[in-house]
Length: 317
Length: 322
Image (tube, rainbow over all chains, first blue to last red; front, top):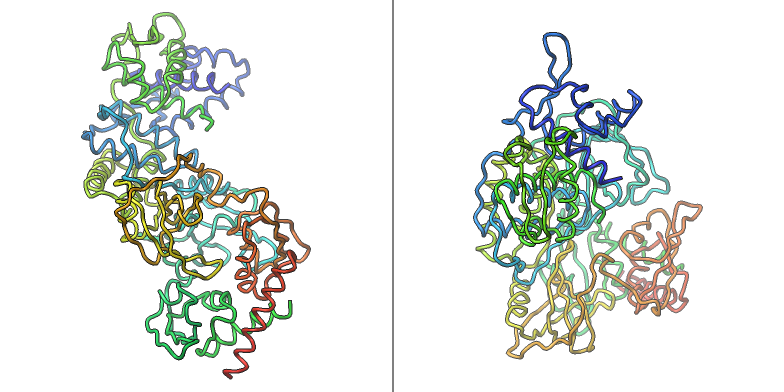
């Protein structure tokens, strides 16, 4: 089935690229056996429309022109369909081939190989031996969730979407209407930034919290897309990366290495305890509670209350 | 990875352009240039003679192979639109440009490789033209810890042993150990896979948890091990590992995102009952403390007790200080 379709798409591409003049649907149907075999006019029209969309996915620009007699013709102008000259040396070629290996997501992996093959056809040199890799490093981008591919296409085409989203502390998912701007992978997780229509504001979504299908909506964006979309900055703020204040804690000697690594000041208090100043950002309370009886929060008072509340809940068990 | 008809068509179109310039091209070389196996190439070559500007004889591509070389007998007459490769599609430009930009930020990259990548990126941006526009809507950041990275990279290249002080969050302790590094990889964070001489076992270490590192003048001698298959995830508990059951409320659902688990069953209050296996359940005491009112350990009971005891001991301290 896939071969039959690839063969049909090849024929359509060769016809459109090879002809210097616009071709009508009739022309194409009489030249391409697979179209001739479809007996119903409706089925042929649907197949033809899908095939044109598929060829556009792989980079073809197919224009629709109307002749003086009012006939519709299709043409793929050579100047608009050719890759402009691009000369890559052997080092540049090897670097690109290696970089393309980061994708584990099927659509991007396929697109990356497709791009490299076009560059090969354009004369990109082939190394004598396979490139070895970046020293010992193997960078990989995780394949991501089911929501990734539809959102990537929606960002590309600037098309609004709806999906059910479960906030980290919500019992039930809620329907969200979003104008998707950009996707970013940070610390191995994918995030989407966009304009949330119901809230009338920018929101960042974590893809793993999208429940079910992402549906594409008709229409265009209503909010202006900023030149720079800062996905990572807002995620980092929630992860407590941006401190807004200082906290003072006591830490048991020998415990809590990452707290020490982050401390701006550390003073030994006695044989048992040290006193630390650490940056206080979102999420610090939950983190400090993890250390149980090895940490005592001194200030600020709200952080101290937060940690004590958490400990009380666990102590009740 | 299943190949779509679009990917296949894209490959065959490039192949036709490539073959036009290279009469008698070698099958193995063409396959290598296209990053595919010889069998995959042969299967494309079997499809091409059925493609052309019309299914009537003479308008079809007359391309054949003896399994070693590839010949195109009517390149002058047929496929005239394929003299140049197709322009890059938006997804293609995105896939290459985003990958190249992300890799170029890796601190462990050799300067020469980085320069080549940046040059290639600039040329690609120009060649892709308007197709490059959408590539800014996708980005990837690798976290890699510069100094530690350079030492591990060097140890692997020179096959030398490392001494590291490593932080285990589960036990909140630093341990000194010698390791024979096998490879580095980046999935979100950067990790080194190594043979640990303290435990005589294969271990994976996250570079941002290495508190101290020292390159030793001792040759690394890891036993031959198959590199782990990362597609199954970083954490791969053994079937014999003890089982832990945790019930969380809606506020603790993130547990299912961060901990690989065997089951996550919905609870009526919007929470989850998560069943997972871990070689050392004691390390999950921290999780119980972190969850606070958002979840509790159901089993094993010793683990639940230890979290409760830790919380009580901590509360006593607040009584003393207050």
